[in-house]
Image (cartoon, rainbow, N blue to C red; front, side, top):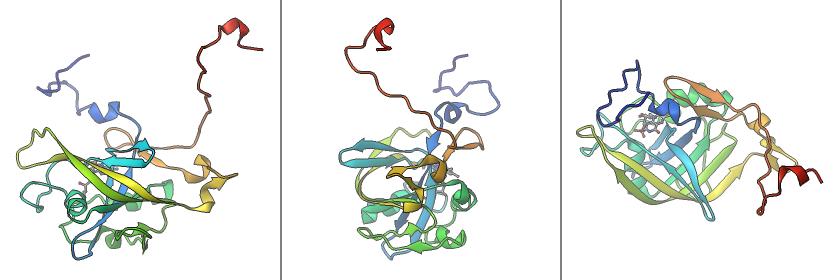
Length: 218
Ligand SMILES: Cc1cc2nc3c(=O)[nH]c(=O)nc-3n(C[C@H](O)[C@H](O)[C@H](O)COP(=O)(O)O)c2cc1C
């Protein structure tokens, strides 16, 4: 099948786009407003985008009903005003709490408190960290790129940040490596579906020039 996304005429029961960009890691973003009220929300348009220095992105899209007139979601408004955020990693044990924090609570409501999550201070930035999450990235805001937006009163933006501090709980390390079997990261699929990483396989990268298959064994 093929469809032109500009007409949205896919003929399927649900828009398949998100189910075709999978799995998406979930950035569980902590930010604070100017008065220090904590905000916590999951973003699966999230990823690491550079390693040296480490940088991440998350993309708040759509419209926040009671939000600022430009439609910005609270995480976006907070990060643009205060210049800092934290990415907490979502694990299997945290999946339900993460989902609770996705509710469209009014600005000024601390979703971490609503979800009953204990928060701990960060070292380099004001937004706190989700204590039960084994990996936290303390980030300094770099810039926002505004994308086309088809919904009136809404805003589609990509927020870039530089990771200036990394916390990794020793409990998810095996011989100094982050161990996926211990970490059990949860990722977003399409529709209402998620997956959890439970199996990994290694695949060494090829060297150039590549050798013919016949002499690859020696
Ligand atoms: C797993 C998951 C992933 C989500 N990913 C995104 C996303 O990438 N972009 C987005 O705008 N909303 C996303 N949402 C919805 C937001 O979490 C939701 O709109 C939330 O209320 C935004 O909170 P905020 O206004 O406090 O930033 C996601 C929700 C869930 C449960």
